Length: 225
View (tube, rainbow, N blue to C red):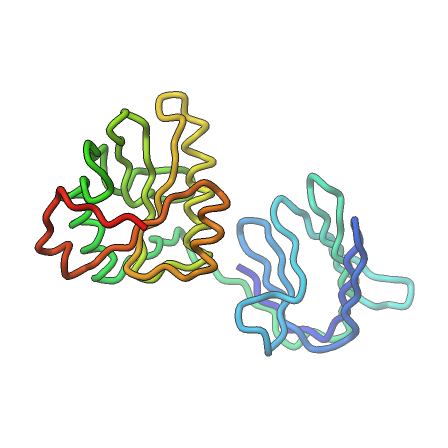
């Protein structure tokens, strides 16, 4: 990962155009090929970015200003950075990330739900926990009473990001002829209204889990909402 703090302007050239005037900013270049431009007032959200695959060409304009051109490998869209001053430039090898570790409650929820899979409905059977995909493991993969595959994403508090995560898993799982069609269930102790609306719009079921009840569960009594 390369971290550059520089006084720069940024122009986005593509389906739309956008301009960031000259100011100090953080330029983040990751090993996956992505480039993002950050200010100091927007938490994690970048001012502008280019998703991989993309290439970076560093050159010099006629006036002597350094110009970095980031070009997307598929769309041809560009970010053009004019660098007035570089205050910091460093590269770091982070290696392979071990992935997000669930907190104790989420991990225990997964274990309990897998043990009492009929909480989701009569006739449900477990395929496995932590079913692997190319973008990470699905919390629980199971089959309903008709034998259809169901992917379950578990959260302590369910928000829109969790629904988006499950949507990506479903897209990958439905490419596997041995599993498809795969439908999704979003399960949490608390599901935010916006997340429930998004899940319903995408055909994803929602299940509210009572952690205390699940620990002393009656497996024939599901709580589906």
